[in-house]
Length: 493
Image: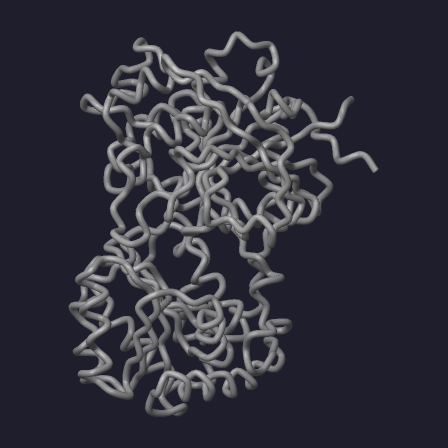
């Protein structure tokens, strides 16, 4: 049996380019699969923000051509071996990817009007690249709407090169579906027979993800609970009916975190390294964090929040209750993130109203996130919905107990505090209300003061949980095996 390849096709990949959790997954999962002996390759766009020299890119082909509607588009392909064991290919096409942002203008935050054209081209060009380079993949692992046209292209192709390829579409965040005007349909080369309400058509527009769900061989999302939730109208974002039709082909596999990057025993960024056996050293990191952000005291609980300031993350609930928390509870906050303008302005104003009780950094800095995880007592993730979430897994690894709403991957990964036995790894609430969030912050705060021995025990439990990609990697390999109908070969040595 010949060597078999899993080909990832995605719009972003850490460390090359990242806007969110999708980049983290596409960066970590192939690396984990490669360590397990799997032959893995990745294709992503060559955005202008990608550092050629740092990542050792070299051009491997040029003059590649793909037919898009009534025109031909010519592109080049670069390669990097920066990620150990994972050959990564980059499609260079300046017309669509030489811009100052990935999906939107990074200054105005307005999405590019031609995103439908950009990623329709990318889908076609990725398949052409696989053929040009002779990548005979057994499974194409696709990610979100940006690659969701590919299952249709595979299903309708007469090219024998693609005959036996199977497609797995991973849904990282269902509400982001890629809806564009119907003018994209002929450019993408989608037959009008597929532009119907059961496939790509969505109230006169093309819906990339909808078509991908219809035509992919298998579907999965990034936590078991989210896979159940998206079958319901509440979380299905208008596609729950289609997902219920495909339910037999849908599974949920929990994301992992990069435990080489997120490991308090080895973290070179934090002031003091520690493990669950030496968790008391975390206090030195808390002292550093309090001083760095100008907070009041190391004796008061410290709640960190590092999230995108968007409605999904529950920031409206938090905005309704954070000032009563700051007035009524002896606690402190460090918040880092950016997003909706009102949220940037509102949260950014709080340190002036409550000096010493709250610090806010509008933006993102990776080093500060490490410091926040290592120094905080609690990590706040009050999401309205959360397909998986990495923050709560990282925070537990560092002994910062999550305060979360019971949804999606937050439900799967946080064990709610049991006051009687003094065990758990975090504090959970159900209702989408500022009152529920206020009470849960109060619950965590009271536990910190009244039952400190429970906090110590919970911190140790949280830090011993294993959120590496190792188990999830096995689940994906099993899924690939089901799809290919045979055992996947490991790389030849």
